[in-house]
Length: 591
Image (cartoon, rainbow, N blue to C red; front, side, top):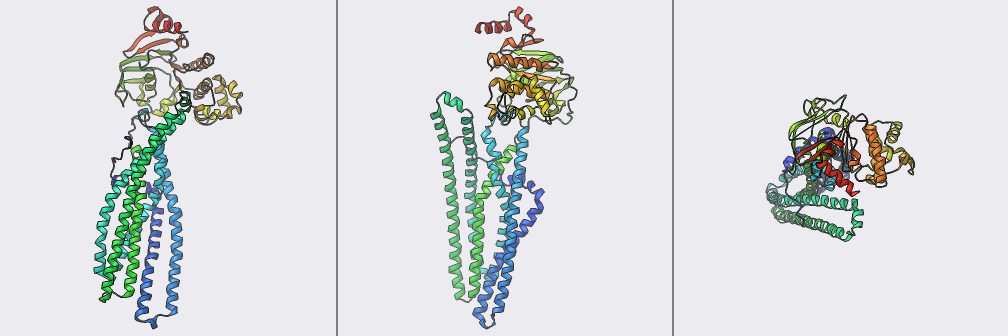
């Protein structure tokens, strides 16, 4: 069995229900009516044995008094009750399930909203397949749980109390004997239920692992084929698929034990009624009609207990879904608006880093210690250096994708933590090497840069990015479907669309993170022209491996694990014959 599957639960059932119950608040009227309907259907069901008892006892003791009129009256009463039962059952089956679906929808919305607030650290440590499983499959069972849970327990409570009262009225001693079995049954079933819940949790975790494996393999299918590793991927899938089978097999073992135990206790309760009830009737302690009614009520009681026990499977599925939902909601939001945060307006683009220290939260790998840097409004800064020196990390700190450990980052004289995240990031545009295009059209991907932009504004942004001409040449122009992650477009085309998106956003601060390093020479030339146009009049921070693209920068910083080691323009740094000179000469030798 996979070591990744964790059956341990951090939450008790009480804690989970406490977190779940507030979702009923919006729908309390539906819950009340649903429970009234459940009570009505229960009463309709419980009256039938009383009618049979009345007719049977009268037929045995005083048959002359039993007339067709009495029988018809009882029949009409029962017919009315069944009509009411049908109407109540329709409300429960339809409106109750719709309420459950609404609760599921509310929970999924809350989970998705919370996921949007989580930092990059969370996504670095959590598989997308697991996240998708938690906000889709895991919440499916919540619909049935949220509808049936109050309903089933309410019905069971009514039937148990009603049955106990009626059965005690018929024979106290027989009822006491019968109800001695119930506590033992409950204890045994609860113990098995706990194991069943753990098994369901393992199932959910392994489904997430399986989804993650499938997603990883399918998204990387070109790499798989290029390295002819199809068989290796099949083996890894078979391992995860096999683990899922073993977990389901274990789950069914507990389910079988659960059902077998309940059937055994059913038989034991019927045995008590047959033996003890028969003896009581022989001794004249109960009438034949009473015994018939008694057996019917016991059948109803056993059916109720069995239904609750069978519902336990659905209950555990629902609790597992709620638990995995709660785990998402309890994931800590590390990046948030401070209480005194204000909107960031009229940004000029002065950026200062004062004694900044930072280590990634998940591995505590220190990247910066007491880093100091000043960038003036409208200045074009380039950052070069070896891999692992912190270039990309530095760019991720400015829009607060991570919080720094010490020091402060100042924008236009104010600490960036005093600005709201939304307004801060609205004023920063990013063009990265790994362009992400959403599944949709070219137009939709460019328009993502600014909500409410007109088609004319989108086209103007594309023209400024040098993308309009190639877009017009596509099959459907701006309405061309780009495929998942933009797979239908070349690297240069995707990059120019991402630049057009930033043009449309029109931010005063621009961060270019190796935006041309993965492109061929022709694409690089075209994209570089677009970037030059984009950088005009903006504070620009450029990370580049190709030094030819940053020669005209106002300042070039050489950033290593030791901090900023060199600073100056292209000519100044070459004349020093230091790290930058070494990079530059090595790059020329490789050409």
